[in-house]
Length: 318
Length: 204
Ligand code: HEM
Image 1: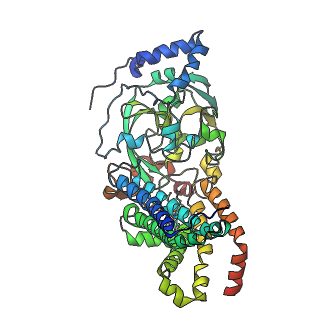
Image 2: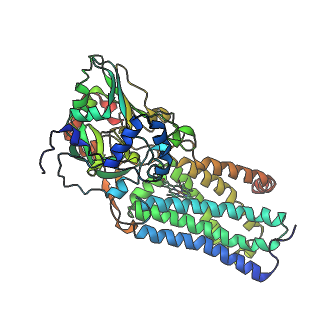
């Protein structure tokens, strides 16, 4: 264990001088001329800032950072897993706002910089189990979603929490073109029950491997729900809505028989086209050092989360 | 319009190019996958590459006879068998990668997948047909089988359709490249409708 993160909120995100300068330029009167400089920067990989956070320890084998940041399902940037790392680098993540709406006492639009001041950052090392039967172990950095949501004082009518990804076809080629975007109806929407959202394991991540998120992993802020299939962990969030009714969610809408609303990791419920009983581990090494593991119910987090589903049998499965 | 090739040396050169075009990428990508330099998931990468490679060879195989008729270049037909064998080569490596690297030789699980997942069942049937065509591709066998050889080898068309179905079905989202391949495949089959109808009548 390392020292606790210092409580100075401004130091949570250590901006590099150059970046600051550019931001101030954009804010200022010369915004237009500054923006016109952007294309030259396009090809360069997005700069990730180091974060201050409380470290975690884990006996899980981490997936190498390079694989975590080059193997992504983020159809807004193309359907191939290598596409997001190629096409997302110019994603503009500053300034970034998250709109809070629906059944809560406090609603409105909040700057990410302010949201970051509310809670100290901590590392969480979670296994991410994709519905495609592979898994990674990723050292996320973030804070409990529940701690964030409590501030808005959700009312008793808030039964579900609905999240949306940025919808910006100018920046996201997959939203401009059906072929590039895999035929998904954008914006991407995901949802949790309020109990799931408030669960201490549910994380709002802003970084991984010690630095801010790269765009392909859902910069600047994303959800991580470790006991559910990866598609529930929505990326680049711009809206959080408290709802009385269960929302329509993206993959569930596209193929209701293949992707459930709950999508809890469950080895005994096969996807119609493949088994979920075991998973391939995306780790280091080439084809001769591959490993599989048996998939665990709730991705191994059953002890903490099974109680969420006592009494709702059907949901627990799908 | 001039013939594409007219002499034996030109045929040999063409064959050499086809061998190179088919073998070198297959070996190179396998090497990259072995040293973990083929993306984050070299296993899927190889499965996809060999799968698509098989489809490309299959299209090439089926285009040989129309091309040689159109350009009046009968010598081209001498390339068809080797292209067909490369279809089997790629398809077999595709399946071996699935069995050995993805499933770590867990035979029971693989058999379970072949039976339970319709898109894999379809791929497996296509592969059985390709194997039947491969093992009867020797000139000697061809001569012995006579008309029955043509009947048997016309199974390449239904196998082609099954492969395209398997391809489309394997994709996670409904809009994908496999649709374009299916469209091209439909056009190809349509252009061969006379042969196909003749074959259907023969089988009946
Ligand atoms: C027992 C036989 C077969 C098995 C077990 C099999 C297995 C698979 C699997 C698991 C995938 C999907 C990979 C993924 O998760 O993305 C796939 C895709 C594919 N297969 Fe097969 N396959 C078989 C036969 C064939 C044959 C005979 C061909 C062609 C001649 C073929 C061509 C393809 C193609 C083109 C794809 C799509 C690759 C891509 O998305 O880039 N398969 N196959």
